[in-house]
Length: 64
Image (cartoon, rainbow, N blue to C red; front, side, top):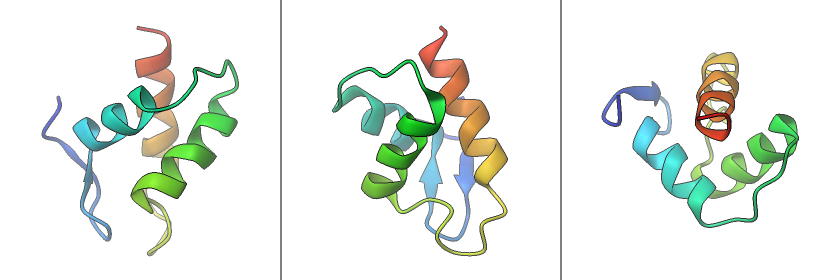
């Protein structure tokens, strides 16, 4: 699953999201984590079509 591209506009993969999450404190709020991942990877700042996919990946990684 690591190499799956989630944000085509900014070329952000599941591995990129996982790496971004590993560099920050863990928050229980997925939306807060999303904001931090977005700052690091710039995901969803192109067309925005990947927003829900990014939220799903963060949620999965936080609850794994």
